Picture 1 (cartoon, helix red, strand yellow):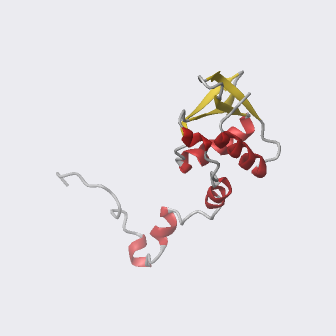
Picture 2 (cartoon, rainbow, N blue to C red; picture 1 turned 45 degrees about the vertical axis):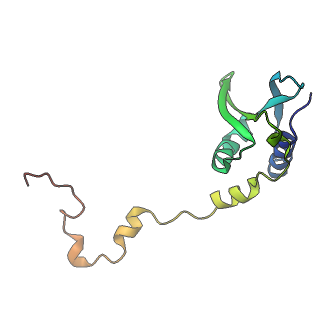
Picture 3 (cartoon, rainbow, N blue to C red; picture 1 turned 120 degrees about the vertical axis):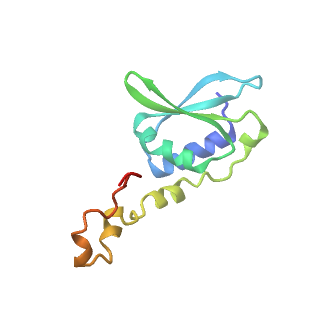
Amino acid sequence: MKIPRAAKQLVREVQAVSADAEYEVTGEPDGFGVHREITFDPGTTKWLTDVLKVSEDPRISNLQVRSKAKKKRLAVCFVGSTLADFTGSFAISDILSVFDEPDEPSSDDLNSVGESSDDAGDSSRGKRRSVDD
């Protein structure tokens, strides 16, 4: 079965990150005999869905998480134009490295910074007041 070059590139990058990642060609072929949809296994779906959403790659026309036998699978549909023939990187490893960076301080951490003992007991701080108060 023929799939777009961009789909082949995506599979290569996914398998470089997770060697046990599996995909399946799904959907009907277009008029040129090219299947424009591939579906990933549930384990890959867990991390790849957010990565591809963030990438907003123009070669991908649609992302859809489908349930099959109570297991979620990510279906990736590629555009019907020649744009799907471009094999540039999807930058999966770059996006994953950003996801793995330490989180920014929480709002609780920020609230405690610079708080003096005089402010600590003020219970009205941060509360919303109505117009009647």
